[in-house]
Length: 474
Image (cartoon, rainbow, N blue to C red; front, side):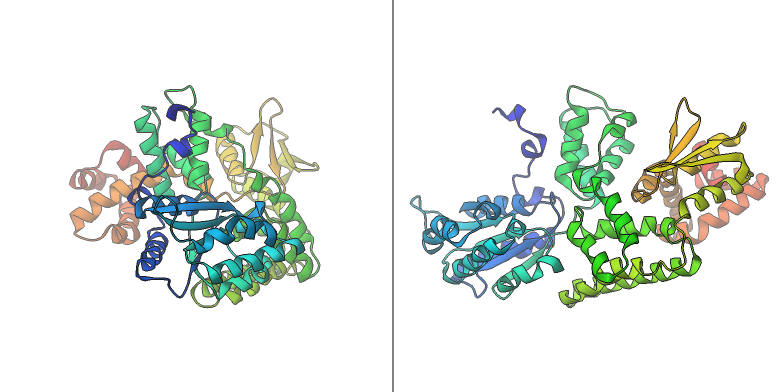
């Protein structure tokens, strides 16, 4: 396969550690550990890289191996589950620290989460024995160690250094996508690249794959192209899991959600937070549910900084704590939200017909909505609704995906205006941009909205263009 035919995620893979997007602390710690082998065999002869998929765990060790002159022996752990198969493949290589070509050897076990079940206990114990006798550095790679696989990996914990990899920040994903489009001379816009970056949820590899999917055979992109992106497999089952979570009657039943989830706990947390008002439509229930989520967030923070064993309390609060908060609610939160939106726009409940289907709520107006239709449509869409052309109705799923990223996309232009105005205000007022945003711009908004004669004076002083003036006034 020629270079041009390679998938873009491979074609634009970093060649050096300097080119790797983010996770600099993790890569530095990994590099320092590998360099320690130059002085002899260290106390910890293995490291465990953990983090979500697509963020560069395997790629970073491949790049480091090339830079530091290691011959890397990479094994997919899920393909070699038993002690016998692992020892046949790795046993001798672990004790021979120099290859026949004179290179130092590096052993990598990827996809460690694939080792599960009774048959695999031999596989885990075999890896423990290999680590104990190895004369070569060993790298284990897996998704985040959570409570359900904690017991499985416990024999390894005393033998390894755990290095955490984080999702790639949206800005870093954006920069990489921008770099690729410039190299390929593909015309695009910041909104499109930002939408792709947010949609990736920190998974750089999937962001590049998405860009490739919508760009093949094109020299320019428009915003409609990203609407064709399908949600990934890990999200297809999430609405079902959320529904099961709120239907759970015991902590044990709710805790099963974690084991069935195809997304990491941060994303699951966002799904639960987004849908709490839809299921817990009683104020007391909603308060208790949000309180449980807040406690889950505290436990997660403390587990990350101090003691990973606190994670089990996070899971209990995030699932069981939320599920058991439902004592008085009827589960009509979605309809209540839609009615409240209608009331805010001057309509009554009788202005709409509500039909419940197996998957969601159909809302159809009973009369002409006039000029308010556009504002109402935007408000409904912010709740996850889709306007169905030809029927004159909106369709809203009972369980909606987290809307914060799409709200972030929709406010892109406004945020850019805020940034440009804040820079000018900060410069003129000799203060920080944050101070300008927090304390000065709100006052300017009030002044310019209420006193038209001062608008021109302020605008000239700040050197604002027409678009910035309109934004600041409105």
